[in-house]
Amino acid sequence: MAPTSNTKKAVHFGAGNIGRGFVACFLHNSGYEVIFADVNGDLIDSLNASPSYKVIEVGSEGTEESAITNYRAINSRTNEEELIQEISTAEVVTCSVGPNILKFIAPVIAKGIDRRSEDLPPVAVIACENAIGATDTLAEYIKDPKNTDPSRLADYDKRARFANSAIDRIVPAQDPDAGLDVKLEKFYEWVVDGTPFKDMSPPDIKGIMWVDNLLPYIERKLYTVNTGHATAAYHGYIRRKSTVYDALQDKDIHGEVKKALENTANLITQKHGIDEKAQNEYVDKIVRRISNPHLEDAVERVGRAPLRKLSRKERFIGPAAELAEHGKDCSALLDAAEMAFRFQNVEGDEESAELAKIMANNKPEDVVKQVCGLNENEKLFPKVVEIVQRVQADSQDD
Image (tube, rainbow, N blue to C red; front, side, top):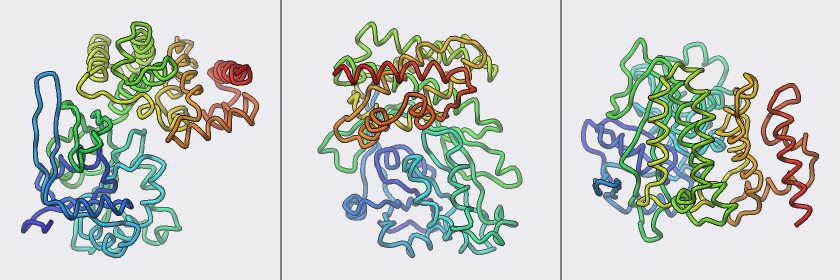
């Protein structure tokens, strides 16, 4: 669709449900023309052929719909030059592609940044991923000598500013006939580090909360929303539940989720000075959100990518490792991690198949090092080794 005159421009990598339903919606509502970049040719063609799509917000109090317009889409695999040009003149570059894909989008972003005119203010780069420090990770790839001439780094902040963010909004699997429309929950939170913009105005994006210390928000979200969601999914999968909603109707699984979030609440309140009552209320709200019957989500979809979710800085091992070092209870997190280790060879999920191979071909200690990034000196290490031994033994019995 053709842009309106004098409009601001944002390039967003990842035209999937989160990109269209969350990030692009905020950008659109803030007056930006959105340029979607994706490698899915059919999706790109659909976007370019449709002047609008709907974002449908659902909740217990009802449903609201809004139309998203003023966007275009570029196939980043076949139209790199066009994409570089758009980045070189954009105010904002965002992405929701998954942490493992950041290294693949970095080269074209680097070329776009390198081409920016000195007359333009620096572009704001914000990665919207479920990972701690995702924008920092993207910036490292962009500034890698393979992508950016080291001689250009001295004044790089004149061309780009990189801000980490924490996003929180549940976007379930969509109806098969939804087309470009996206259904999601009404609740949202988008918190972004404001410190890279101390000497300039941050991007004018309505709905963003700019903060000076992002880590408490990132860890509170990752170790509550994502930990709770994944705990319900993995326990639910093992107990043959169809959806997260179904799983949370089971008193035992509901109890496992609450216990895991009690573990993480102990870490969050002590580490970040968050009031215990406020965190407990936040936990209760999160459990209600992931129990929303309007947002039913298959346990297989929520549990996908177990290798990433079992990694060192993620929702189980990250908080459990810190709790173990301080002699605090992390038993429910370890129970959830065990269920994740049992999430193997799930149809449609490559990581679950890779996890099965790793578990079948390695000693327990090596599995823990490779999958969880733990070493023998950490107090959590032997506890996770026991879990792997148990799962491997059960696999052999089968």
